[in-house]
Figure (cartoon, helix red, strand yellow):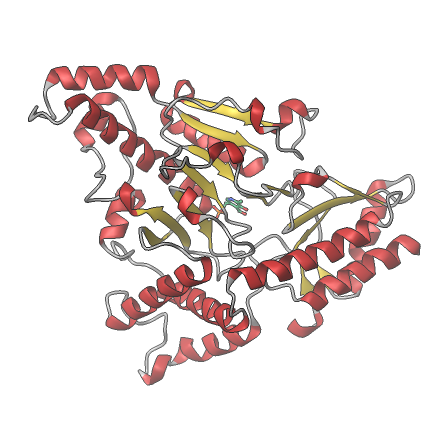
Length: 425
Ligand code: PLP
C-alpha cells in the first residue's frame, strides 16, 4: 500500500505530515542551496541556531508559553526526563532550603552547622509526590524511588488502589495525600497505555491569588499540542517529540526560568554528595542545557528542523493556534467514542468516562464468547480497510486508537464507520 491508503492509529512514533517529509527529503540532500544536507551541517553553525530559535519561537506561539519560561531540546526520551526531573527539582529544593537556613546573613554556605541543619531537613522533609494514574506515571515514580530512595517518595494517589488493581480512573482530589512543601508534584497528563487523561488542571494544585502554588511537573508526551494548557501553573512540562511534533530523538522541556540561574542554581556536587543525594549527568542538568541554548552537546538538528516544519504547518493551519487543533482533536475523539458507545453489547471502553483520553482511545471488543477471536477479527478487518496500528499495548490487550494530530478528520470518520459496520456484521 502507499502512504495515502493508510490511516495509522499507532501509539507512537506517529505519522508526520507528508509535505513535511517531502521537503525534508530534499533538505537531507541539499539544505537551502548550501550543497550540504540538513543532517550534515554543524550544530554549531548559524543555520543550526536559526533552526533552534525559530522552533522555540513557534512552539511558544502555538502553546502560548509565557516569556518567563525556557524551552530546552534534550535527548534521552520521556524516560530520561523521569530522572532529570528528580535531579533538577531535588537540587532546587536543596538550594531553597539552604537559603532558608542561611537567611539573609553573610554565613558561609559551607558552614558545617548549616550543612548539618540541611542534612536534617533532607532526612525529615525531602519528598517528591507522584499522582499515579497509569503505566507512565508509575514508571516515573519507580525511577524517583530508584534515584532518591523510597523514603523520599510519596505516592499521593494510585488509581489502582480504588479500582480493583487496574488503571482507568483518577481518584477524587479530596483523597490525594500531598506532602507539605514537596520538591515537586508529578503527574502524567495523558496516559498513553491506559487511555486516561486529566480532563483539566487539578483544582487542588491551582496556584493561589498570589500566583504561588505547589511545584508541578507534568509529562505531556502524548497530548501536547492537542489542547490549550495553563503553562503558568507548571514549573516544568516535558514531552518526547515523537507523537505530535516530529521524529523520535528529541525531548522538549518547558521550564519556568525561576528554576534556572540566576534565580536558582543547582547545589555543588560536593554538597549533594555530603547530603547523600544524586548528582545528575551533566547532559541532564537543565541549567547547563539552558545556558548553551540546547547545544551543550551534539543535538540532532535534523530532528529540530522537522519539529520546526511541523510547527510552521500547525500555525498556518490554525490561526487560533492550539485551540484550533483542540476543537479538531475533540471532534475526532467524539466521533470514535460515539461509534463505540452506540454498541454497548459489542464494545467496552476501558477507562472511566470522566477521564477517558481524547488521544489514546482504549476499548475491548466483546462480540461473542471469544474476546481474543473478536479482537483479532476487528484488527484484521481494519487492516484490510487501511486502518492500521490499532492493537492495544501488550500489557493491556484490546484495541487502542491513537488520535494524534496526524490523524485527519476523515481518518477518524473512517474508523468510526468501521466500528459501526463491524458491530453490525
Ligand atoms: N511518557 C509517556 C506519556 C509516553 O507515552 C512515553 C512513551 O510512549 C514515555 C513517557 C516514554 O518516552 P520515551 O520512550 O521517549 O522514553
